[in-house]
Length: 263
Image (cartoon, rainbow, N blue to C red; front, side):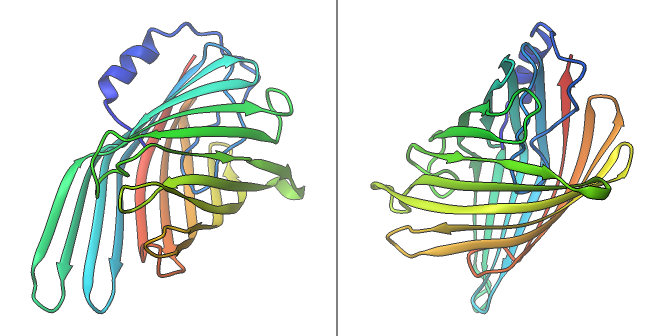
């Protein structure tokens, strides 16, 4: 998720358009998983996370995190390869102690991301490999404080009656919470998508990520439901709602965003 939208829009508008008209519109958002599609050479897409809210409550505290203006810029560089550049938006973290009522609040811009996705079965294939690095632009707790990275291997299958089944296994080299060194995190997402109408799709997903930080291992497991609506060609508005299934996940997440592909 990422930012500085005006500069990204100007860059995208200046990009020459050689998009393959035969390719379906395919955004990264919404949802937990990663698609296998790549943009055609010269095609560009901007994806904006307008707002996302995580809420967690336990016996000791109430935690809320709001992210505004995440932005992702995608650029097709060959028939099966695309580059991605992202910036996390303005993040607001608020923690209220339920016993004392004391409130801690921090805010700021988040980290950046650079990624490359390679389709492994042709331009419209159902398997791809994506590698990414996180650029530590923000200090903890807003950012990770260190360089990190990971690999994803999204793949999927077309099912009868218009359903699509997708998987995204993932392994990461994540920064330690104390800012010194790295550790492994791993997990995956399974999702089922179906078109409700010609320009409206519904996706249900189950995802889990195991983080083996030396300060304490956690699992972020959640169930997600998302809607993607394409009111006009090459433009999408999306909505997502997640329910946490483990102590390491927010109790609930709500998000809204959009994606715009330049021809």
